[in-house]
Length: 116
Image (cartoon, rainbow, N blue to C red; front, top):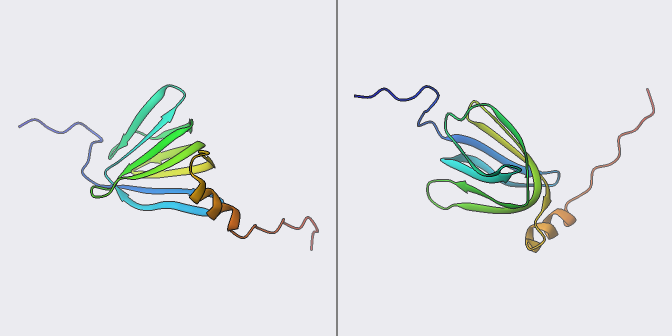
């Protein structure tokens, strides 16, 4: 019987996709697909540590049941030990429903520069 390649595992990814005012997805996944400057790519369980700037397109999270699609204009992804963190800087223009949710979210107060 062939030995599995080092790094590959059946352990699910732990995915968190968020912006400053909204969490789009948080939970387990079989895979995540997105687009960076070199083209489309997939993140699977056991993926090497990875950091990339994302381009406009759909981020697809395969949950094993109901795939989640999040249209983004750009973002950053970080993968480390099956932990996938994706920060969305902007939503694709055709995703008005999520854009409205972000606009309605409370805005943080500016940090005070006064030393105490």
